[in-house]
Image 1: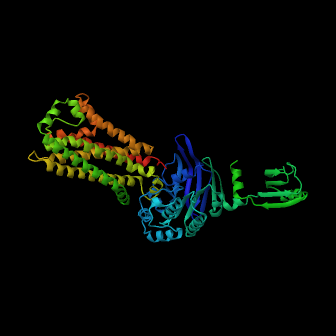
Image 2: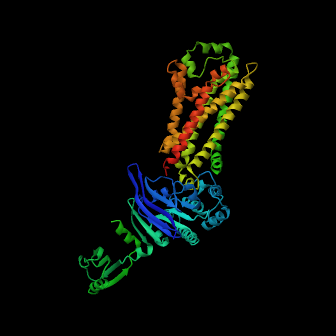
Image 3: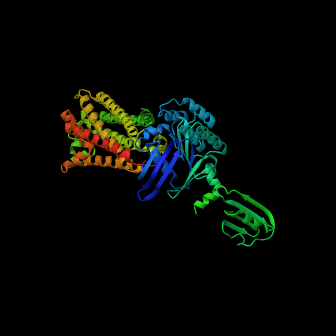
Length: 292
Length: 266
């Protein structure tokens, strides 16, 4: 399998302050790769180094096997980028901006501009200045995809889009992915990543703390228990090995459990139950683990 | 050349207003000459009674103000300052605008090198500077000729002054761009370059007043192309032309060198 993005010990300091430290990543061709972490963890810094907007202070980064700085202009022929906050030339009309954007690429993009604008329901004749933020974001999506890039980089893409547009946008990304595009998506919204991604890298304070297949991350062997009993349950009843996140409030108990299920079911069977729920913890819960 | 076209279009409206301002300055200045001339020798006596330092502050050199070209030498310094302000702000602005307006994340992820961006932006800026210079040149020649009844011919010295002004404009433009390339904070480029430009202007005034510290004249492009000297010699000082070309080359080199290497402010 071909590697599209590869970083080795990628490091960036802004003077004394930390950007990212020793980021090692490898994104394969055709996958949707999630990059997740809270604000300020270094997601945008990484992306901006990949696009040569800023330069790394250490380590290397390659895209399509080429150096992101030295061969930047060449590799960017095949990259589409949607920044987290979109700003365009206020005096231009949408059509003019998209044509300007298309003029940088070696192919005719006019047909794709019309298709994408149709899908995203974008009025080409409007002035940028008169657009709402959500509509500017749509302009961003179209300008990022109009040249049918092989690599799509999205930095917190859904902010400002209503749920319907988010859905259309995700469908669009899925479609591009099916056609062979690799997608690199940064986000702090788990459900977004959960919906789209094949693999995910979790970044915390500038360092990658975990890279996992989405499917493995879901199968973490943790089970989320929610119990309501008819009589109050003592606080330490479930305080055994394998239980975490234990919350007891009179008759209500919830906890995460990893271990021998038979044992915990036996313990529960001695209670006078009103309701019992056992489910897979969502990514949010797992994610919190990494951040403790 | 798409960036060039985009930039030129983006700065077109501004250039039109600068050109209108330039045209108005020349027109209003030479209209004053009409009034001044009709007042006759009395007006001239007033100037003769003033000390040299006061005259220098108003840009009045050792020349007969009753001739159209003599009067124009006074007007020229104001045109010069205007063109210098335009060039300085344009130079600093054209390289920092993408960062300040936050469109950098649109432009620079495109398949384009920093060198190419700087080159096309510089070309657009040079075009604007030349157009403003042409507006100043044509309007000066036309309005001076209109008031120049029987006086010495003024077209050649005016054109020489304008060539000098163009070289100085290009110096200020390249200084503005170099400031934008070297300084990490794009907000600082405009103020830093403007601060130099105004300092250079006041240095020129100072050097006109005093005989001392004349070696400082190399620091101010305003002094390279002194209108009275150009009229008297009917030529440019080739030494200053050479200095101008060297400065433009050096600051352009600095611009390309540093702009390739610095982090964009995004």
